[in-house]
View 1: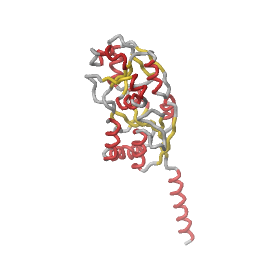
View 2 (view 1 turned 30 degrees about the vertical axis):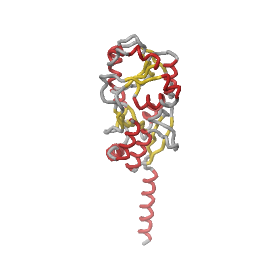
View 3 (view 1 turned 90 degrees about the vertical axis):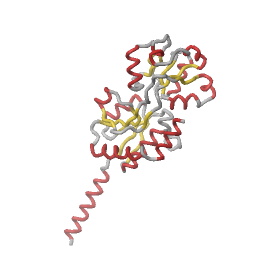
View 4 (view 1 turned 180 degrees about the vertical axis):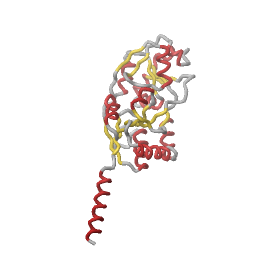
Length: 258
């Protein structure tokens, strides 16, 4: 009897120890609405909302860590249990990181933003080639991917451009456009609509333009450390399939793209 009790207590201790070692996923993010917002405000941004629902569905503990965007990729490289949701896949990133097997969001087709006062100067610009071979100066964010279609065309046509580091504040990019540092920049419609419509001043200053040859929007994935345990990634991938098939997910996407 005594021996059985000892074995039972040992089993409980082993289970408790295993539970205590269950990994907690760190969701790395920076503030960039409408994709990444502020926690516990009801305005967390669609990517944080979706990612937290995915991990809850997978039964995996998680925590958030707000970081400068310049540090997030290094953090995921160093931490087996860190992730960065909403990332575009690029060949360089594929060599360094692992991606979810399913996407978590797809943007609207690529657009570009200009000063409203300059609209007439873009009357004959319809395609990305028209835009990139014009005399207009493109604003580019340092170390940033705009998705394979835009990146490929920028590389091919080599437009006049200015590369800037705007840190984590996308609004500063708009201020640079208003000040004439460059003439246009590429943006998702979701982000452009959010920022242009955020203040009457922005609405009167900027306008978003379409490109007739733009493909479907960029696909966003969750980026992980290469060494994330395979069984953990399998759980997450299965949960992505469940969450993205729900009516709640479809409603979140509909609201953002309205």
